[in-house]
Length: 202
Ligand SMILES: CC(C)(COP(=O)(O)OP(=O)(O)OC[C@H]1O[C@@H](n2cnc3c(N)ncnc32)[C@H](O)[C@@H]1OP(=O)(O)O)[C@@H](O)C(=O)NCCC(=O)NCCS
Image (cartoon, rainbow, N blue to C red; front, side, top):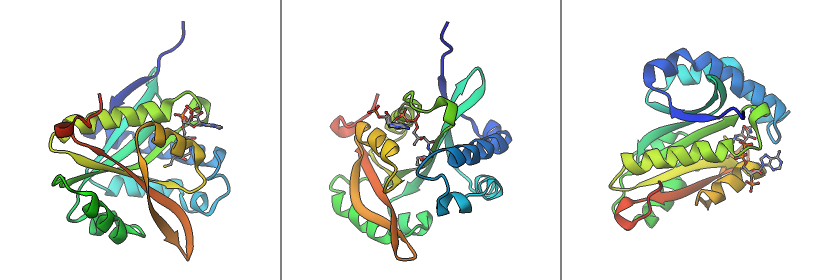
């Protein structure tokens, strides 16, 4: 019988106990997967760095994909306010991004759901896990934000696989890039979720 992959949101106390496992999966995945393999991003994304980041940041949500309790992948996300997005995101281009979203905001949306990272360990890749993980996250946002939210993420410019998956999930490119040392490396993508206009996600 084919073993099922299950998707579930990881509650806070359990999340803390699984940080080392998540950090291990993160580093192992980056080591094996283009475009991060050998890139500056990978060199900088040490296991200890990610451990510290996950431990220090409050209010992370985690959606996990598991097969018989073993971690196949995960997506982390944070709930932010449009008003304070630039201060909270602390990434290049955040000011321009805030102005861009405010210009799109004809419906008084106040919330931003930031999908910070999606990781699928090498042996589970190419089976739709990343797409399904983020589908579940969008579904969660749909019920969390009945008054609507911008769902925001960022992808490295040459990360074709996650870009393909995001297009399928209804994300659009903003044209706003994250520029490091003068080099454009990533671009912000977004979609709206607004149950008031049937833009929800079941
Ligand atoms: C990017 C990543 C999350 C994709 O995970 P995944 O579970 O393999 O993705 P999916 O199976 O949902 O595939 C998404 C799309 O990319 C395509 N794809 C995925 N891996 C591919 C590969 N190695 N070669 C060609 N196409 C690939 C899939 O075919 C799919 O498109 P399709 O359904 O139209 O065919 C995974 O490769 C990973 O963890 N990479 C390292 C970390 C990373 O880049 N994270 C994203 C940014 S934070």
